[in-house]
Length: 256
Image 1: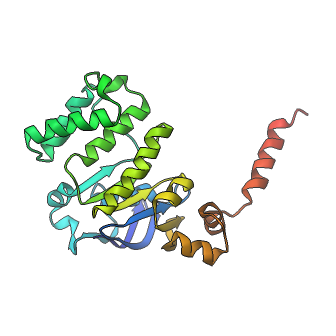
Image 2 (image 1 turned 90 degrees about the vertical axis):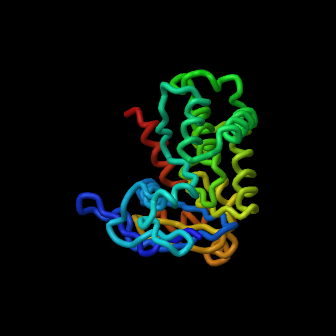
Image 3 (image 1 turned 60 degrees about the vertical axis):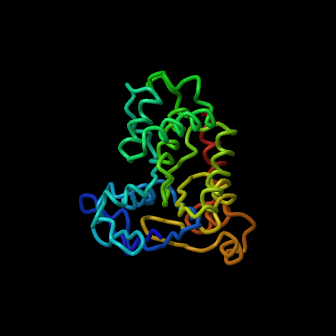
């Protein structure tokens, strides 16, 4: 179980996350939604132990992760929003480095790397430098690296970024399969359609505060909406998106 307790984060006196609390249990896939700047990535980094909260704490299995961050990271798989990779390494070299740092035995590591590179369609590129990879290929390497050591908790921050349609569909099914095998999954994304199909429960942030935490079905009922997109619009949007789109098109068409 991964738990955020009253998380607060301030940067230079500006509050970007304000009293956020929730739990992700084994077998859960929890969607984490919000507009740009709402605090989603900041939350993900705090949950991963990469950023210290100004106030509050993160617990895993009832223990503050700051008490033994190394032990916690052995059980964590994290796909960050931006692919920070050692671009001078090949895909295989990078994954070997990640696996060794995670303590995966050598023979098992080589077997896993070979199988996962093939399953993700990267066999032809595994010896090439990551600097030559497309954005989607880099994203696949990040996902493989997060899964190599069979973690108990997974944090995905915009994991479908750069992926093609096929890879996105595979990722969608993979997340469900991992949860069914007892993993605790937090899935942050801008793509509401994916979240609606993958997640049973959704947390919505707006300006650093939680404005919803419930099942997708219950949120639809409460908001009298047919889709998660409509729910999201009612909770966080202050303008009619269709009208805003028309206004933009009018400005673009202005030739006077």
